[in-house]
Amino acid sequence: MDHRKNWTQKQAELRKALSSKAHFDEASALFMAQHAAVHCADISGGLSWSLQDEVMTGLTEVQIKKVPRPGQNSIVWLLWHITRIEDMTINTLALDQSQVWTADWAARLCFPLPDCGASMDDNDVHEFSQMISVRTILEYRAAVGRRTRETVRQLSAEQTKEIVPTEIVQKLVDEGSINSRANWLYEYYLNRNRGFFLTRTATSHNFIHLNEAGRIGKKLTAS
Image (cartoon, rainbow, N blue to C red):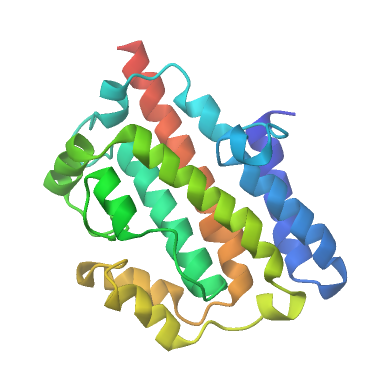
């Protein structure tokens, strides 16, 4: 079976397993496999096919930073966006712990804002893509992936059913992870249980945007 089709099938199994306390151990194993596939192979010890590695292979830094046309995102912007979303939702919302993002990462990335990019317009995306460090964003992404894998095991079956308190979601706005122009994202996260973020922001959201990056990469290398 094609890797992508298999991943999609397993994602449906993950959602089903998470909904049943009796199958929580199965859900945990499925999550780890699904999550490994949307990060570099290094974070799982090379035990899984990596969509990220497949997408990034053969691309130059110029191609990774290129915005193909107005209304589209660069590959580096997509990597930033999915990494920030995973970092802030898994650590703040699902696990109620500090994010990987720190002032040190901001300095290394040459981008001082913790914004996840949801409110950026075409000019913002272009400027961001030119200033960001591709190598460092891949390092940050790996750090976020490792933190998720190390800590998400703390969640119990009961905790995955808990609704994240509104004041915890508000923290993402207060600290700047969600820009005030992207209030729709704040509203989207309200009244979600902790398990929701395992099947969305740590896995399927990554998968969707990595596929988008793959399509952009193919067009750039073909031109």
